[in-house]
Image 1 (cartoon, rainbow, N blue to C red):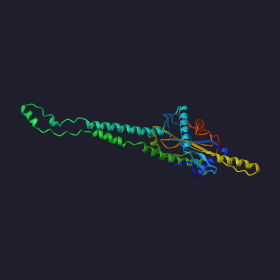
Image 2 (image 1 turned 180 degrees about the vertical axis):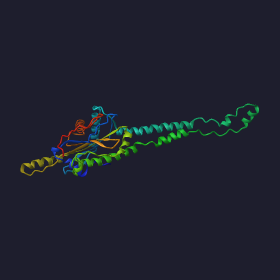
Image 3 (image 1 turned 45 degrees about the vertical axis):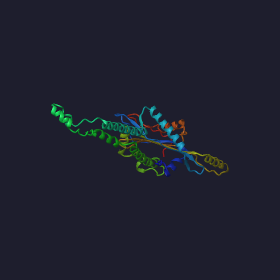
Image 4 (image 1 turned 30 degrees about the vertical axis):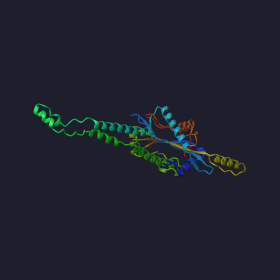
Amino acid sequence: MRKLLLTGAALVSVSLSSAALAGTKDFALQGYALPADKPVTITLMRPDVDVGELQGGGLPQPNADWTDAARKEITAALRTKLQARNIDFVMMEDRLAAVDATRAAALDKAQAALAACKAAPVPLPAAAASASVETAKAAEAAVAAVVPSPVAPDCSAEQNAMKAAEAMPDAKSHANLVADYEGLHSAVVGAIIAHKYGLAGGKLPTKKEDFAYTLGPGTADLGKLSGANYGLFVMTYDQFASGSRKAMQVMGALGCIIGACVIVSGGQHVAYVSLVELESGNIVWFNLLRGSKGDVREADGAGTMIDAIMAGMPSRPGEMAAPTTDIAAK
């Protein structure tokens, strides 16, 4: 299973940021505006979600049921958000399912046509058919003649159609393409987290004012698959404190009374979203959320988180990203 981007040092740095830095901070490609001379359609990639429980010792314990519930609610919230903003969008998972359905329909049609061709009556050879009885002598000869063997039907067109249907790509091959770019996107976002937010790597002196990150023009294949010209990638990592972790927090706070404070962090919550121009592969807008905006396992919490993280995303032709920073710039 593909691992989440924010692992190791990057995840620790983002998750353990101080409460004063909780909130969102976004970046956009300088001067970039959505094209006003053509329609804008966004394909929503499958949300990358990881929800678990933070144990007393500080180790996260994944929870598949929580993760599935959160992904369902986040996907529903994204649909609602995009529809409310009158954005044309398509779900990448739906496109992959449609690829399999299209291939299956083409195979069924080709198989039926080939079977019908092979079962069709075969006319006798032209020589036999032309042996009309013109004279009594010709009639006698026709009766005495040996009936020729039937000729196999010409089903070459149907066979070619069958081969073409079998050669059509299935969802698995397209899913591999999607997974490859999801992995590449995670690596690029790792650089953004490290160098634009100054986490787990520090800012690059030569790119303080620039935001220029790309997945490369190969993302055009994602556009062909989805019929969209932009891709929306969403990730969230949430760890809810277990009972033992909460008890440790209380004990640490009580220790302050006797002058022995022990700060025990609670649940960790990080999310990001990015908008990619599929023709070029450029990330044209990116937003990072640190801190909880609600319980993403529930509809209200997922909706609040999506509202916060997508507030500045450009969505109309000719529109530029509006700054939505609500945390101190680092």
